[in-house]
Amino acid sequence: MRLFIAIPLSRELRKSVKTVQDRFRRQQVSGNFTPQENLHVTLAFIGEYDDPDRVLEVMESVSFFPFTIKMDRVGCFGDLWWTGFEESRELETVARKVRHAMADKGIPFDNKRFKAHVTILRKPQYYNNEFPHSEIEPVSMTVESMSLMKSERGKNGMIYTELGMVTARIK
Image (cartoon, rainbow, N blue to C red; front, side):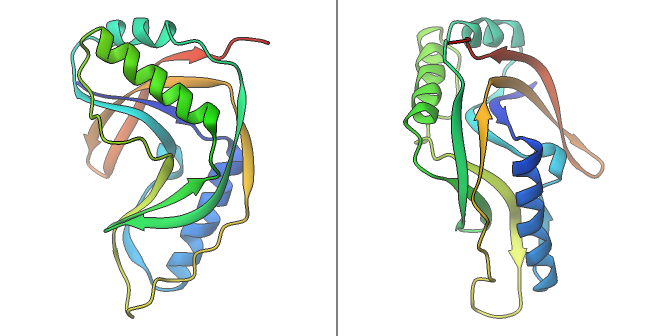
């Protein structure tokens, strides 16, 4: 089963992403827009792994307190367009703790450098050489949990299912 650990987005952040996606559509940008229900920040992509209980056990060993993140930019990595976040030491720390805990327990994961972002569009197509207008109204949310997600290919794209959640400690 294909797994990843993610922070789900608040309603406000999903709404902000939808505004950016709608703006791109009005500018005649097409491609594979990420559905609102699939928007998240990936802390660690595990890939094919058949022991979700073990992953959840490792996630539960990672303690963190609630913290705030602020989405404030739009950018791209080649043909993947994203929204990004103001620098957050807390977010970086949680991602690092999760990855170290998985490495310590021998759970494989993609160890590319963590870059906090939300994928909003893959394989964009547009009709001029300029990157379409892409400002975003900065919006914040409090991170109170992280989720273990299963990813499956459906007939209309990827379907993400939450297999478990770990909540932040109360201060």
